Amino acid sequence: VQLQAYGGGLVQAGGSLRLSCAASGFHLSGSDMGWFRQGPGKEREFVAAISWSGGTTNYADSVEGRFTISRDNAKNELYLQMSSLTPEDTAVYYCARDSQLRLVVTAEGGDVEVWGQGTQVTVSS
Image (cartoon, rainbow, N blue to C red; front, side, top):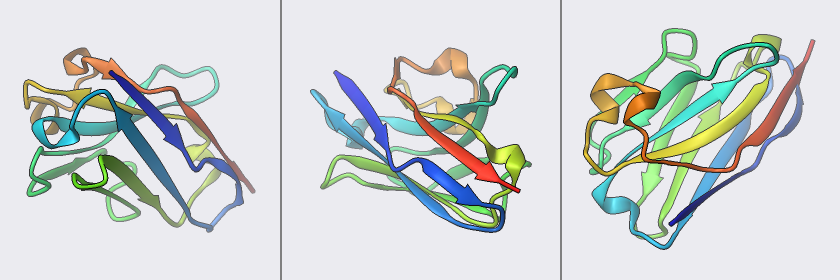
């Protein structure tokens, strides 16, 4: 069971990036999925989550309206479209799995069963 996030990079403020997360060893379709991030000197924080069906999403206030989480269960992938990026969005971004279907409601890292390897996003001013 493994998650691999990719798509990070360096972008100027106001720009956009699309992160992807590929799952292996299990099917995404049975799990709530989410994105968390950890900025320099900060604790890991919730960014967004999506229910197993894709019908429900939840966003941190700091990214609401700028980020969009989505999933393609057929491709076994999770995505995070980020726009209007600011330097405060600089962080390592992690994808996460919760097969108990709590994450989209709780937005809690404690409900994550599997963490992916992170991908670095750096936003320059």
